[in-house]
Length: 270
Image (cartoon, rainbow, N blue to C red):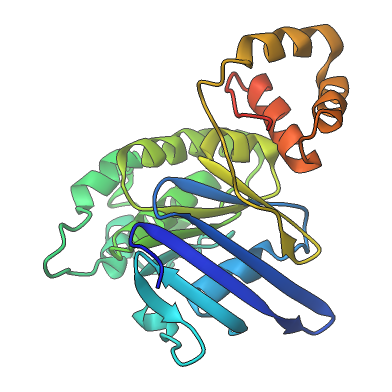
């Protein structure tokens, strides 16, 4: 049995020609980024956590078993919110009614309130608007709000910005950063974008060819930051990435470190 306050997962199996074999043990807090190229298994891991894909393995969330050799909690009984690449809103309903469609009442747990969600996501001016009149970024913010109002213990986000152009990504990203800072719901966030990963993640799990590297914490106050920023200005991002790899960083973590430095952040490259 895992201690409470952690997410312990291990999934192994074959889907067609693809073989997945991943395991991780992370805090049930903050944002954990599943990072890697297309086809490496990121979405499959997310679907396994949601119960939408069933491979052999185990999953314990905050001390509760969702899957092991004898147990498999059905997807509709797992308290997760799932945000897909496409918003998939109900076209015949207003923003307000789409949000209410996801709302669940809870017993004994302080719920995420509708007013809180609309304020965090900047949805107040849109509440009576039909979804066909929303931009792509606005639609995705509504989809995130609907997932939060399902009162999840775990929020799963599968490349929620991938379908947006750069302008719409820039519109939505600050709202995701705000959620990170103000809500206590742990998030598993899938992306292949190093800037997104560096801006949002507390820790990174890099995936490649169906296998996962150990989780790496991102430290915003790394004392090496000033030196690394000066080195970045001196040699440029590609050379600094090569230097970090030569010093022992994985390729993925080195790339994230440089992306974060470029974005004015400071993940540890170790």
